Image (cartoon, rainbow, N blue to C red; front, side):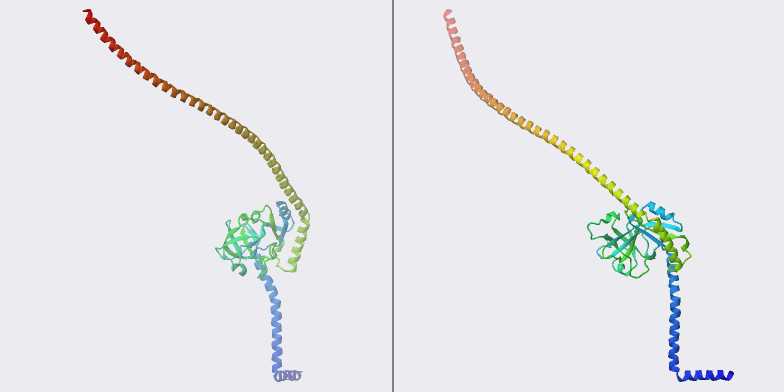
Length: 368
């Protein structure tokens, strides 16, 4: 038995030595195959573990609820009352163009009390005050904007008013961030404007949104903290909760549509009431204007009559004044004539008196 084994080993070594090049090639191929197999088997779990740690560190949501008509407090209360739900975090979002860069961004709201979807700060900080913004730490947007720059929200559609969604449209960049919602290098999800896809995301304070209802709600589940993301166990649990939430919210779209219609009808009724009030005020103003015009016309007629009467009185007075002036001139002439006659009479009187005085003296002399 021992001799046969020794002979077998001698044959093996002899065969290897005689065909050592082929043996080394086969040996290298086997080693590479084993290495690739071991690497592939280990990479999957390592990637899942890395992603799971990243998601848990930044508290990535388990589910996201979004509605075209928005989410009200009643919708949020339904979500909070669902078994298995631990956190319901409402939020706002919108799609905008970033200045004239041509980039389309998904705008998210942020608040200090948010428990889900944290951000990894690459540079700077998260926005804290109104008018501050943190931008996606992605090369596409970092080529156009940096820390301290001003970012302006725009939309080339003239029918879209950004003031309906935002209190302001200009922001100062205070940080560069990453989000666990986007682990791909390129994709940033869909967009409702432009080409239909977003190029980046940005984050602004929640108070900078002017929307009346929330656009989305992020859901955190109670029993998924011990599960690893992307595993069948986790996916099955999320699908169960997703089905339960869809069933709980099944009637809400129609109800919300009725609410929106009722709100729109109320605004329409209010607008019609304001129009009717405006018409009544306009009619009242027209009546007052007509009365004022009638009074103005009457006043104009009175003015014209008074002016004509005044003209007549002035003409009459002027005629009387001219007559009096003529009479005054004639009186002055008569007075001058009388004065001349008086002066002449006085002269004659003085001459008569002088003559009489001489006559008396002569008579007296003769009497003596």
